[in-house]
Length: 205
Image (cartoon, rainbow, N blue to C red; front, side, top):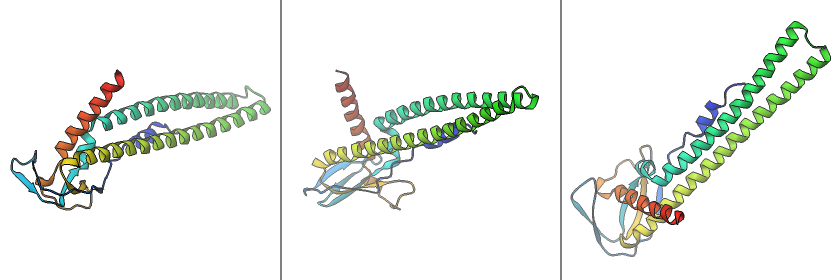
């Protein structure tokens, strides 16, 4: 039976959350903001458009970091448990082979041992698949939590910005070019982390 670590690690390779379009209805009115990547200011007219770099936001969002760390730790525990069970099974296989080759057990007993080993192997394979499915589901939930948090914050962020659209830009996304003056990623990252820190502090009270 192959080690489960490769499978667990593959599951834990958290995919970048790609938000192709985040839609927000603006209330009109012009606003100005300073881009962190450009010292020049850009005047935004009614119906203005901005974007966030999803790769940067997710990579630097503390909530995403914490949730990913928790999932990785759980994956390691499941991996350790599965490896221990696998080693026990492998030890039993070696014991069976030793006794079979030297004729140290009667054929009926050897047949019983072989049957048990086959059943244990199937249980291990089932457990591996079960753990894999569990981690995949928890990863999907994590992605939805992070996505929902970003979208909720952008609604709040947009109350005094009046953007009609906030796009999500990624390296392999559908936006092939975007003016850096429209990039609000740094503001969003700071706002998300500030809000998340406040939530963590309130939970400890």
